[in-house]
Amino acid sequence: MNKDFISSVSIFENLNDTVLEEISSLVSVRDYPKGSMIILEEEFGDIVFIIKKGTVKITRVNDEGKEVILAMLGEMEVFGEMAIIDGESRSANALAQENCELLAISSEDFIKLLKNHFSVSLGLMAELAKRLRKSDQHIEALSLSDAEHRIGVSILNLAEEIGVIRKGKVTIENLPFQQDIANMSGTSRETVSRILKIFEDRQLILKEGHKVLIPDYLFFKKSFG
Image (cartoon, rainbow, N blue to C red; front, side, top):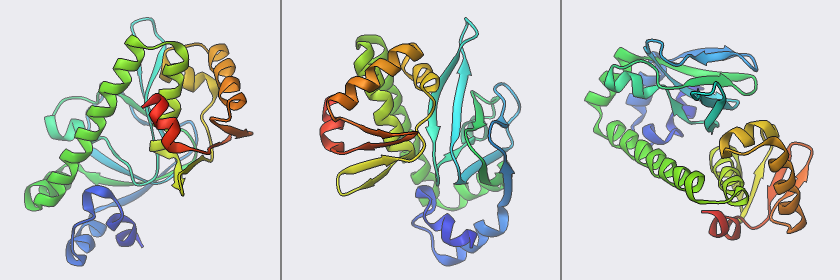
C-alpha cells in the first residue's frame, strides 16, 4: 500500500519497484490529530515526513510574537528535510491543520537514499528550487504589492499546495481560516474578508462554506502570479 503511494511522491517517482519496496520498509506511519504539533522550531531534527493524508501548516513566530504562515502543505508533500541536510535545528514549526497521516523516515535512512540514488537527490533539489522560487515571489508580493495582490498570491499558493486542478479549474476543499490567510499575506482578518468578497463579486472565486473554486485558474495565476 505504501509503495504505491511513495511512487507518486515527486522525489521518488523515477525509482524502480525494488527501491520503492526498500523505501516502504524504511517508513513508519504516524497519525497526528488536528491542531497537534509535528515539528517545533529550534528543536533537533531527525525525521523527514511525507504527508499521506491531511494538511500541514508551516509557521514561524516573528519578533512581535505573531504567527507567520510560510506554507500550507498537502498530500504527497515532503517536509522536515532541511534540518537533516544541514544538521541545524528545525527552522519552522509544523502543525496538523486537520487530522493527518504521515510517513516518517529517519535522518540516517534518508541520507542513505540521497547518497545511493541520484534521482532522489535531483528530485529533492528540484523541489527545494521550486520552494525557493515561490518564496522569492511571496517576499516580492509582501514588500511591493497592495493587500489585494498579497491575498491573491496567498490564494494562488494555496491552490498550488492543497488544491486540485482539473480542466483549468481549481478546487480547494478546505480553505484555511481567514486569520490564517491574513497571517500568510501580512494583512488583517477583516481585510481578508473584504478582499475575498471582492474576488467573489468579480467571479475570480466561488465560495461554499470552506470550499473554494477558482473557475479560471490560468487567469487567476496571470493576475496574481
